[in-house]
Amino acid sequence: MIVGNHYLIMKFSLVNSGSKEANVDILSKHPSFSVSVDGSELIRNSSTILLYDLATFQGTIAAGEKADTVLLFEVPEDIGKKKSDLVLQMTVNNTLYNIVLK
Image (cartoon, rainbow, N blue to C red; front, side, top):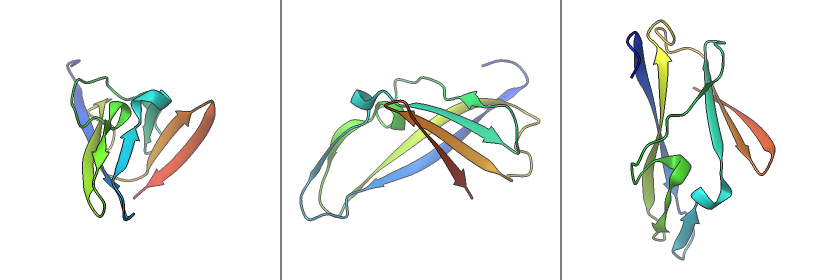
């Protein structure tokens, strides 16, 4: 980690609300994730070897169950002090999605 930065950790729950188990393979979709905090420049997620990293998650989720995952971002310390506007940008198959988080 760069001196003067800290980690922003975003937690996501993948919920299987169906009646059968679901095989999930996010890694095969080759997604990319970036975040903007309070209008800052986009920052890409950090690559990890965590089994529960959202960007590389592969697993089976039983019916009615969930899998908790995370995205990890290294951001300058002065970004996000107020916990204000977070925009997660995700690209999958050349399609860009902007997700406003609260």
